[in-house]
Length: 215
Image (tube, rainbow, N blue to C red; front, top):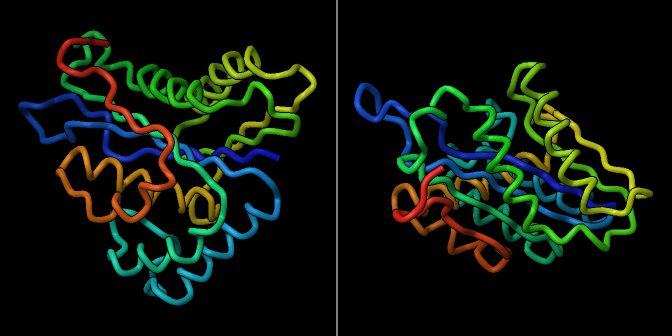
């Protein structure tokens, strides 16, 4: 079993004059292989929640948790063989005609990250789990778009499942939320404190659309 946990950090607002959206938008995937490794990841999340997170907070959250709690969390899972793939969109290089097509932009950026993950030789079921934060139509469009692209890369005998789940009920989503925030924070605020703790797990981390390109 190959588990792919996907989450994002930042926003897809583009009104840089009337409002104050983020400069960047980060999509991150935590990749972990094997049921036992996934269980170990879940145990690490639950232990951190139990020992380091206030009871009124029901999940790990990169934007809320203290650096002390984050470091404790990473200590629990550091020995687990997982990898992190991430891409950060430079929003100021997006064409204005796409400002109102946020779902299309999101799906495209997510696909770019997925394309970096070597799934061609996977011989077991693949599960892609993402936060259930979109409406039903957007979720269906995302699933169909991603399935078309991923199925072209994997053996047709390999099952591919896409699940949309609430993050407070899915430990893997809480883990990737924390890492996504660390990568986003590095680019948005030049804050490397949390990123430097887990950077050894990062396989791919790029900014999409630098100054010489546009979307």
